[in-house]
Length: 519
Image 1 (cartoon, rainbow, N blue to C red):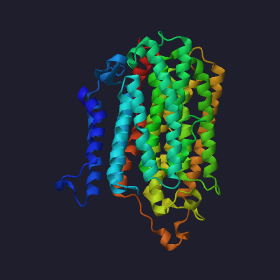
Image 2 (image 1 turned 90 degrees about the vertical axis):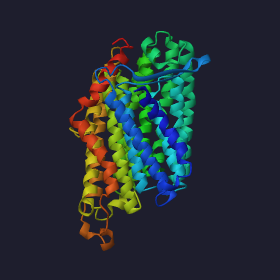
Image 3 (image 1 turned 60 degrees about the vertical axis):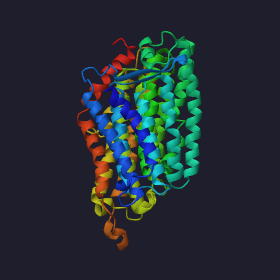
Image 4 (image 1 turned 135 degrees about the vertical axis):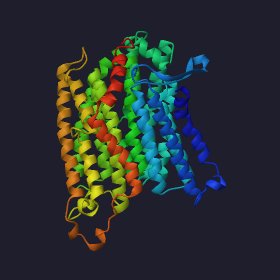
């Protein structure tokens, strides 16, 4: 188990280095480009298999205990250790990350985005995977920061070199926002480590902030929370996200929504809730307010983009929908209750599966129509996907109703539990304030249903016979698309029908985390 977790974190880096080397003569296939893309599929597939083996070997009777741990001294002078481990909170995120990277590598093998060398693309993808997996596995504050920052450069180049229109501006905006937030976050992490005498996240969580003064906790929450909020992204620090999603290649958008946004909310749960509980209690009402505004703001922005004549880009619309969905995650965290935090963690996984699928689908539509503009896609008679590409249209409608939170699908449980957490927040928090936030969140669910149903009506419905003859030729789902998208759809159904699989992992770990390691 120790070896498996270390392998999952380190193997992508070795794979990235190998991707830059010449392919052995017997493995080149039809071309060196094909060989390096096959290398990416192989490495991510092996990492996914190792992650699944890790999950099978995980002691499901003790999900609150850190397992597969490695604890080695790295920088003795600062007491910085190479400390790895997983519990019921991090294991689902680790599995989802490994799955999404494998599906993106598989999709790219058949549909590589236009850009420079495939070698660089595969190497950057693997470095990005290593950084995200390490973020969910490390148990040292400084290692967490290094892993958190490790993803920025690969994602910058994926957007800037393989993206679409306005890619340079979007990539710069992404890197500047996240770097500025990270500088402040580092100061907060150092403040905690130097005042408590350790950077070990397990020891800090067990101490539950007793070694930190109230002022220190307030400053730490403010600094670390700001860096995490940028990555989440929380309103009003979200403005980099729509530009980045619109410009990014399809797999870049999938990974940005499915994995990178989860790093911010994971930091709130893993670091701020157990290490600075008093500081979080002070700032929780403000975090809840920003979350509630983000839910409504994101939904209203999507509703505006979905309206006829507004030239709304579908990728941009889904990006704004992420602002709303991540608002539910932050609202659950702000409630500081087991119900709310469990809902936040469930919503994290659901958003990764559903929004990842939506970005895959919109990328496929853009490839077929050469545009993601909603007015162009709908046209005078509607895009008529039900009549022209029925399987593609049905899957888009499925992803849309999953995203709006239809009961029985994954999107329902997380948002419902987050609202329940706001209904009865932790002791000491203002219940009238959180009831107001809950009302905003419930209103946001109505707006979400409105804009997603408008999108389905405009893109999927219409009369295909009314279109010009050449326009009738539209490829339905291809085999490689079916292979890349089916796992996400299947897991969306499984998580919706059997939520206890995920909640059984997270709940004991959340109970222990909120009790300061004493539960």
